[in-house]
Image (cartoon, rainbow, N blue to C red; front, side, top):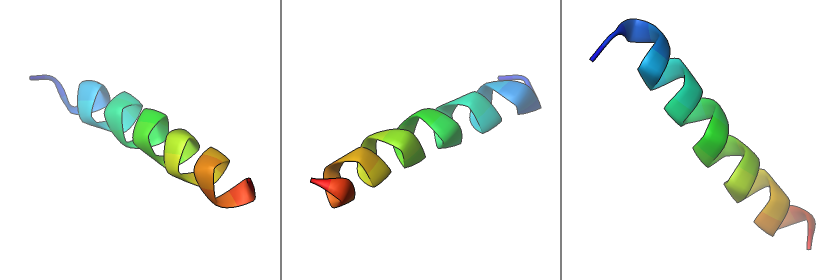
Length: 23
């Protein structure tokens, strides 16, 4: 897995968690 795939994965998970915390 290339390094940017992990970066995209972290951003995606972070946005989901952030969205849930905003609710």
